[in-house]
Image 1: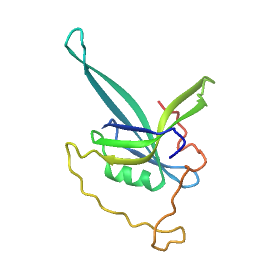
Image 2: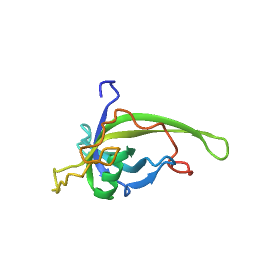
Image 3: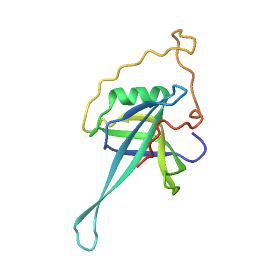
Image 4: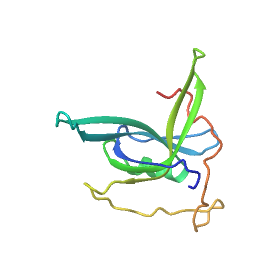
Length: 149
């Protein structure tokens, strides 16, 4: 990613990844990540903490793999780009949110271990040999009818 819109976070998954499919059949998974920051207040010498919450969106094979591999509470490293989307709710109010569209998601191995299993990739014609690399997500289709939180 060379467009300058790159973000990497390390935190704990706040809800199990939810796998859904767009009307055209594209897999998408969403989950939340909580990132804690801790620092010592120089005046009081007390430790202070703040938590930030991020919504993460994964597409295609990454969505499948995340939904099969990760659960609430797992510590993960997420790398991707920030994307803002807007919509109107049922009352006509304009809403928007910023989320991370993930390029990579992996378990943090600082306090855990993981067993990695390579998935069998198939080409679009069903032959083994790998799936094509995608640089952009598919055209934005709503994965579900309900509005995000």
